[in-house]
Amino acid sequence: MQNFIKFYLTFICLLLLLPALALGECTCDAGGGGEDRNKSEALKYKAVAIASILFAGAVGVCLPILVKTIPALSPEKNIFFIIKAFAAGVILSTGFIHVLPDAFDSLTSPCLSENPWGNFPFTGFVAMVSAIGTLMVDCLATSYFTRFHLIKAQSEESGDKEKAAVEAHEGHVHTHATHGHSHGIVDSSGSGPSQLIRHRVITQVLELGIVVHSVIIGVSLGASESPKTIRPLVAALSFHQFFEGMGLGGCITQAKFKTRSIVIMALFFSLTTPVGIAIGIGIANVYNESSPNALIVEGIFNAASAGILIYMALVDLLAADFMHPKVQSNGALQFGVNVSLLLGAGCMSLVAKWA
Image (cartoon, rainbow, N blue to C red):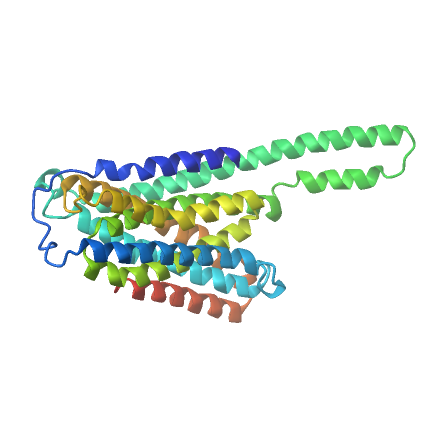
């Protein structure tokens, strides 16, 4: 896990430097954006946005983690499948309704040259490559950690066998109990250890996808100097972060990370958008969202993020839960998870009217 924490820190640092790549002069007009500019009033709304989004994101991601202590809402109960279906619907809607259209807008902008941006559907291509790349990372990471767990279990088994042999030689009678214990460790193909590994890989890949577009959202809002644009975004993005946080928090709960890892992952999610807003405020004087560099960087990263979120929602969250034996054998639960999925996707899609 320490390697993943180092990777997260490096990734975040690189991601926060992205606005520097987007600086540059615009070759086409921004479209009358200067009519309602008010820098001082916009700054007040940005300060409110930082506080509101930070609070909403923190509550959203922490809620599933805290309620797991309530027996009725534990991951083993039926209600957890319903909550997770709602969260997966939120993540799916984020990819399709919020992120992918923004990527299309950026990479098909008239501010970009016709060749090559107008001659090839780069948005769909980047999203497709991102989804395939996520599949590969998902597969390789799961395979690596499964082998790592198996090697560790086998070494523990050999140690137990040696101990059992010594005890048998000394005339002790609890050899069979030790032998049975060793098989419990070695059974890494069972649903327990293998499922835990899957949940941990899913959670880490999902957070990377969320973090990418959260920073981009924050920078765009922070760089804007129009109170009319920022005002509706404050509430909309707060709801966006809350619902998205619930989705991530549910995955973190199932992954059963150690407390330190849970705190780090929750902090990463909660802070990325507010930090992005702060960076946007800092570069507002030189950042132009209509410049070719800004459009290309935002478009490519939004498309990549959309591919990750859509793959994770459909394959790792919805397919896994909807095909779970517990859901398949319970008609009422099947109905519940389908309704919950539609509600989650619908609520997040409605937020797109303002965000």
